[in-house]
Length: 246
Length: 122
Image 1: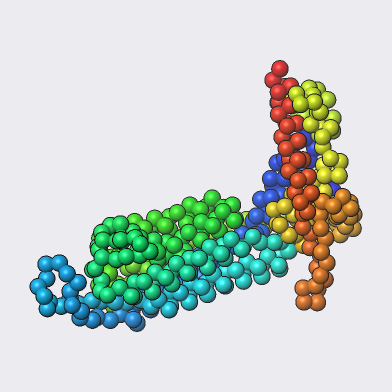
Image 2: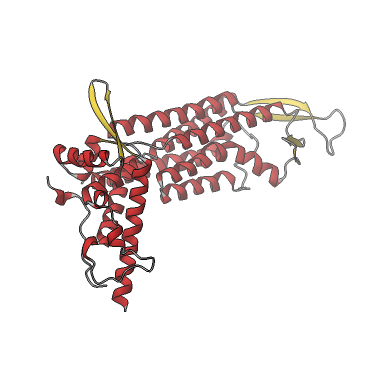
């Protein structure tokens, strides 16, 4: 081993290029985005099963509108706030542990703190939202959230509800992770995820529970997207690492 | 652009309008390529372990140790020794002066490239 192995040859341009190459090598060692993608993919997939197990139908007085007094409406509920809160929190804790553990083993630092903080804030938002959703007298009524009046069943209301689900809990922290990793690919992937979560698809597979397995269509697409992303990022990492070590 | 000389002998470039030629502003302690590599790796890694630096820069332990001593004496890095389990580990972090020195070095190199290109164009 000699000094010649350091990729910083003589000219200023070559020196700067060599510094860039070194930086890329270190980044390749620091990146591990496939882990949170895998964890959140599994958490989202688990949500399908939880949705099936928690599905229930109840009959409540209709909240208003054209129905005559005394008319009743059938409300279908599924999902568990406890599951989403604990599973998301556990996924962030596991991701933080993984990053710290791997960074220590590889001998590099990791700026994981902003991601963990974003994740904790997301979990708090998720918990408040699910608590707020559960405290509503009945679906179909207008909603008040922190002084924000949300008219029932409007596109804006649905967008807020969608954002305060997977988009806020998973998508936004993923953007933070992309910033930390300085990874354009991850940023684009996170934007794709946000698009999936926020696009008001109207062919009937999102929205209120319609059956015991309706969570499959609601969570299946994002889960598949996250798991596919985990696979692709893991493969990309494997390809980048030997080059980084070379 | 014609092949440029090393940072220290880009003789055909004119002096910077501000006065000093950028090549003269390069700090020898930082500009030495291995030490510059150490600073660059430590900057990106935030905290780099001795073994990681040795592997990444492909150096012998003795060679790396010498350069780390120079950087530590210049207060550009902080060296922290400890254990992970039973294994002794040495961690290197950039000091604020080290961060500044790396930033200045990169800025001077960019100025130097600009001057060489400007001189070539005229």
